[in-house]
Each structure stands twice: as C-alpha cells, then as structure tokens.
Length: 460
Ligand code: BES
Ligand code: MN
Ligand code: MN
Image (tube, rainbow, N blue to C red; front, side):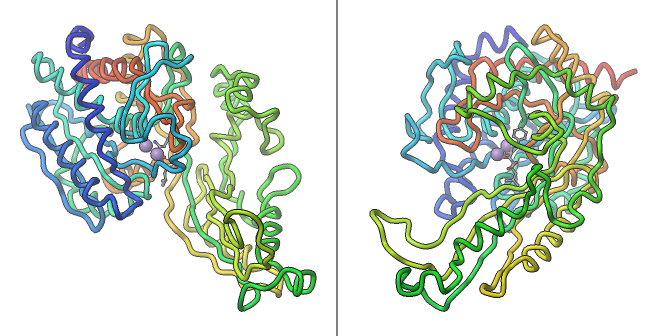
C-alpha cells in the first residue's frame, strides 16, 4: 500500500483538490446544487476506485452516497462512514486564500505542506483517503474484506435525516464494524485513537423586552435592556468554579475513576504550547479538571453566537427590543440530549426576570459515545497505526461530536472505530482550515493496513 500511495500521490492530491473546489456547505440553501454535485463526484470516484455499485439515495435533505464491493459473504464487512458536506466558510475576510480555491503551503507543523481549504481536514480529506485506500487495495488485488461506503451530506447540520436512512436500509448496511476518519491524532509524531465523542444539545434563545427599539437616552435606566438581560442570564449558567448551574445537569454524568483519569493523563499535553498556539495567556474551565479533561470527559455550555441592537458602522444610541443567542452544550456519558435540552429550557425560563419574555428553540443534538478498546476493530486500527506510524497509538477521549455514531449502535447494533488523522490545530470550522499532505497520505496507508489486520483478526 505504501508503494501504491507513493506512486499515485500526485493524482491523489489533485483529486482531493478538485473535491475541495466544490462548496458543499450543507447549512446554506444557496449551495444545494453544489452539495449534490459533490455527492455525484464521490459516487463517480467510488465507481472508478472499484466499487461494484454506487448510487445517491435521496433524503428529506441532502443525498447520501452509498457504494459497495462485496467480494465474499464469508469475509467480514467494513462499513465506512464519512461526510462530504462542510461548515460555512465565514468569516471570509480572515482566509489567507479563498476557502474553495485550495492551495498548498508549508506550516511549522506541516513541513511537507498542507492543503488550505474549507473541508480539507473535516471531512473531505479524511473521507477521501478511504476511497483512495480502497482503490489501492482493489487495484493491487489485496482487498481482504467486503466494503460498504455511506458518505452523507448533512453531518455539519446534525445528521437529522440519516437516522431514517439507517432504519430504512438496515439490511443493506449490515456489517461487522463501522470505520470513520473524522477525528484527530495528538500530533504527527504521537498517533492516537479516539475512543469517545461528546454529545450535543444545540438551541437558540430569544429575549424580548419593550415592543420596539427605544431611544437609549429617553428610556435608558428605566426599561430592561434585553441584551443586558441576556448577558446576565448567560453569565448565570456557570458558577465561579466553572460548574454549570442548571439543576439536574450533572445527575447522569459518569464520573471517571482515578485509574481511568490516570490512564487518560498518559497522553502528552503541553499547556504552554496550547496557550501559545491559541494566543491566550491562560486557560479556563471547571475547577478540579485538567484542560484535556475539560475538553473531553466533562460537559460544557458555550455561546456560539449572540446578537441584538446596533452592530453597524459607528454608533447608534438605541435600547434594543430583542436579543438572541445560539447556545451549545457538549454532553458526556450518560447525559441525554433531549433531557438536557428540557432542563435548559425550564431553567432559562425560570431565571428570566419579569421585565422580558424568553423563548427557547431547540436545534439539533446527539448522544455521547464511548467506543470499545478490546474489539477486533480497535485492535486492527491500533496495529495499523503502529505499523504505519512506527508507534502504538494512545487512546484518547474526543471533545467533538458525530451525532450519528450513537445511532449506529442503536439501529444497526454496530460498534465504531474512530480512526481519524487530523490535528486539532488544523483549524476545523475556522478560517484557514487545512490538512497536512503527510496526514492525507499516511491516512491512506493506515486505512489499507486496517483492512489487512481486521481481516486477519476476524479469521481467528
Ligand atoms: N469531525 C467533526 C467532529 C470532531 C472533530 C470530532 C474533531 C473529534 C475531533 C464533525 O464534523 C463536527 O464538527 N461535528 C459537529 C457536530 C454538530 C454539527 C452536530 C460538532 O462537533 O460541532
Ligand atoms: Mn467532521
Ligand atoms: Mn465538522
């Protein structure tokens, strides 16, 4: 596989660049046709790589690309999941090169060069490495398993239509393991495998005061300002120790044992480098937990966006009638997103002063997951990393969310292997997202080795 990657790497890169030129922003209806064009591109590439069949399945939202190559019913089956949609590229002015005109540049962390484009790492680059690994295995006659691909176009908007697809196509999707590359490694010299993802509850709040915008001199001081009120309400979601104050919020949180925490603490983490890379003088979070713990095994609440009043050029003296915010809560086992959404709603309504009206509208959510470390899938991934990266990967708990993973277990009865190759510093969801050429090519090699080890382990 290594030789195949070396031989075809220029084409592998140029095909990824072509994929990155299509702005498949799932959240933005203006890009609906681009999203479909991306799905078509993936379908064609699956067929070209050696899939027996590939097709688009319609959903209420964007299409799912499904492809497969079934070589022998006696062999194990790997179901590869990935997403071809991307986050909106804004703010555009902060991109050094345009988000959908991929360019390759070197960085300190990526001396072999990195591809800068929206979706380069999350998840087009990582997802496409599966199609190229598959191509390599088929072309060199080394495919040792049956393979199914399910590449969706709505991950970045919560995968709300994929659940129905899973239920409807249970038989078609039957497999032995789910394989996903949509997470991170610690560093290019420190491979790791994520063994958990946080869940999510995402909602929008609206605080309304007077029946119209008011002159902030004439009325200021006498009428509650919804923006001020919203800020106070948000501030009261956490106490001085960084604990979330919503009653019942921690009731179902699984506390890790000392031993489990010590195990996770074995993953190297440099606080100074972390602060320096982010340009911050100090970190912040729940008292009693380290930064890696705060961002993986502990739940949190964050404002993702907040607006109201005058935000244009210059100054306008106004007491706005309304304030709004988008709020997310990252959840850990065994918190339930619907329950947490309900708890938030009740609390937020309750703490609102009489001077305003509050409405809370839930968006999407997802359950947290923990994946096994003793399964054939995990061991195969671990061996693949060890062989390709020269080091045994360290198990870590991830902080991000992939909402469909919990449903893979619930609907299909399948465990997932999170074999991601990105870096947290690759600026996912941010301006100047990028993906290391090293990570892309190494990923292809590692995926090829996963199949080899998984087939071997399954034979025993
Ligand atoms: N690939 C990410 C999740 C991720 C990133 C996991 C890095 C672990 C490490 C995924 O595309 C993502 O961004 N998910 C969203 C889910 C949401 C839109 C429902 C997230 O976590 O915000
Ligand atoms: Mn992703
Ligand atoms: Mn993402």
